[in-house]
Length: 601
Ligand code: GLC
Ligand code: MG
Ligand code: CA
Image (cartoon, rainbow, N blue to C red; front, top):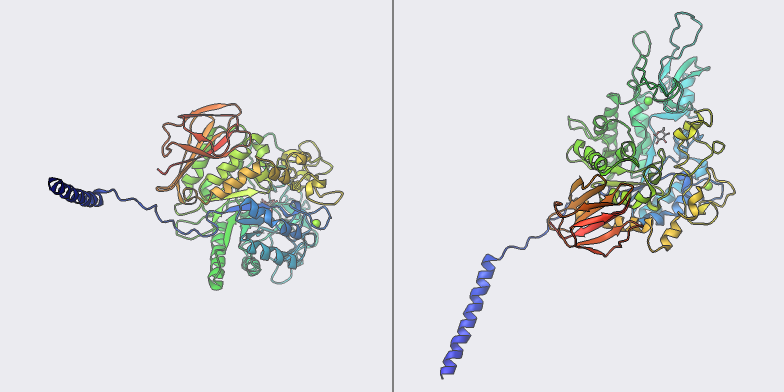
């Protein structure tokens, strides 16, 4: 009995206890926070853009020149690499004085590259693979073989002022002397003014003699530029990389028709024919140009809304100071411009001698000046610049690619960066770049040549690195293709390509696509980048940008919690993905980079 009473009491007690416990738990439990909902991003806002230089990507017909069919046949490589969009340097009809940047027909495909049907096939296949296609749009100039120029030179009605025409500057000493209108120097060297016998006037060219600058003060020119963009949007282009925009306008002549001279830069190492001899105040960054960019934005947005398509992007190629660069995003009056101007800071402000403080400073530079609500982007190389591992150090390839992929915004990869391709050597005899040829002789052509960064892509270790079956390719294939090529990197356990794949996959992580950032130099040589988002895993890149081993402390780093798991490591690192890092410091070899994953902050 006693026992029974006791067990009833015990049972009741238990029940009461459990009920009280549950109620208390319900009342005092700390609510488990849901991770914040992620805003939908537009396709371009966190994509990786892969730049293809069509002449050097893949040759399908054995003429030693890359072409559209070649690109189409290798689109799977882009998917495999994990990029979202491709940008092709110009594929339009061109006499190739500047390898496609001198366009003679803005509405047609260059014969060596294929046909309009090939283009359509490329776009269709890219889209079916989920890749966006961005075209190169070259508004500043046209080839002197274009019908625009031919008509303008002949003063055909409607075309008289299509280009920038000028009379000779009067020579008080000798009226028969035909002086150039001003001392302005072309980007490729020599005067910007070229005499036309036919028209008996000079025309202006900021680049090669064969690339005549359009006159953007002429409404007909502005209208035609919009027609060209519309044509390619209708062909399925997903946007444009806009070439050489800072050069759109030049200062006008005074009431007597006299153009002002540029001030001299005072650089004693240059001769009067070399760019840099003058300070360019009359031929770049003129205020008028931004409005043209804003108008283009309106034009493509209007087209996009009328046609109910995905976003069409406008990406501005502008080597300019930070204030002028940011104007491409839009202005204070709320006018919207390019989706972004390319960020060339890693190219123009950093090199192999830069330390981690320089890197941190340069990263913050862009992010500090970028007006709120815009998307950043990062560029490590292109067809005009020495290749990334050559400008920095080959052992930095994985670290630089990691930086590109982990920084907020859009990552831009120039073909070959995913496998660490370096500059090829191009002899003076093999040189084809106008910027180098204009130097006249062998002495300093390599300081100007863009050929070394344009040598063909390394697919494998067969003839011509698998680029072409031709005996001779338009530029020689770089000698190191036996060691550095895509196939070898696919076959290897560890390679730049495999690191690149891990990184592009990692970009889907919320901290990378939507998170905040923290950048600092842990030591003079070890750079730290953290990406974090409340409720989601944190990612950190530690990267020794120096040329000797370095030790950095990790214990006082904000947003970083242990244990840390390695998710990507440089090819030459003694660590491999999956390793756990538990100690409060890290020792890195020269150039070594490690991407770590930590618990949510
Ligand atoms: C841009 C291109 C370059 C070209 C120049 C003139 O800078 O990237 O390759 O030579 O414009 O079009
Ligand atoms: Mg070909
Ligand atoms: Ca111009």
